[in-house]
Image (cartoon, rainbow over the protein chains, first blue to last red):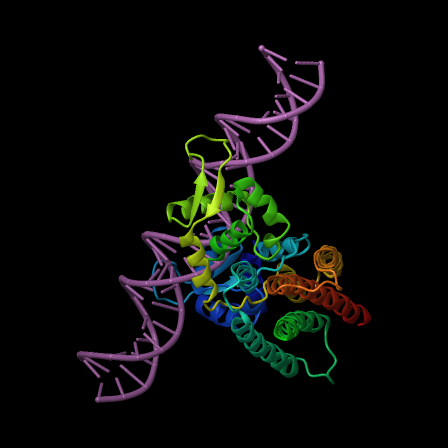
Length: 177
Length: 177
DNA sequence: TACGATTATGCAACTTGTTGCGCAAAGGAG
DNA sequence: CTCCTTTGCGCAACAAGTTGCATAATCGTA
């Protein structure tokens, strides 16, 4: 399960509270492994129970900030998971199911939906490219860690670009017939 | 929920039993919306209850083939879902989490894992390309439905190619530093 | 001080996806 | 015919992800 390890990674980068973690997720690691704040809180509770992380503050009082940090056990767990082999994610998108459905139905037009997705992917692409420019300027030399982080951002860029150009050419193909 | 509609699509293409559906899923629609046979059976049960599909055979006897076909209500449901707007899938891959984890840990090498993923994506790419060549030969003219199906296959090809070239260039970047 | 909006935390219920197993029919080998 | 394997079907339990709401602190402001 990757959520545990995504949280460990994020907490190692900077210890913080659950809410801050959720916010950071929304604009960094969460691009590549999404999670809602409820998932995060639940996971934090489990991880605390497993001795991977430690909180300053008691779990009794609601609405009270609890600051989390990674314990040695958590770091070990992350390192061992990190060295394991993981599954490759196959493609999975409801737009493609819709297209197959439209093919068999024969009466529904999905090109509008394809155009909409093209725009959405374009918007996400711009966000990723902005991160690349801001956080990884070309002239600066980079540490090994930064090289890895940059590669991750570029995976997002490649992914969105791929959808974008596929949408464009598929629409062209479908349009000309 | 797309599984219902993926099943409806597949059953419209050809009515069949649960097991055959699961098999067809493994080499066609399931490339783009994976499902285990248990998910499929559960969903078939629900869909039968909702009057979307009909089975020949009783649900009482275990181990007995039940042949499913789509009812008018099922076709309507599919058409209406198909005309709806759907979410865009953000990227989500544990390899990227591993890379971020490796960046913060500093002590784990993930390039082997990246190489492994490169090979895996290459294998899937070859499967998709084989489908493109076999089912959609270049010289033949195609119906609108076939154009759509081809576009779907090409989405898979674009996706795998994108991962492949990203792996290659990221490894090159990481290697030269 | 009191009030309302915001932020942080969490429970509960539900849906979706996964894993492991068990039972029944069919079909071949001894 | 009996045994064994394969195939089809499905339950049960669990893990992961989602949605909606409840509660507590905080903070600005009237």
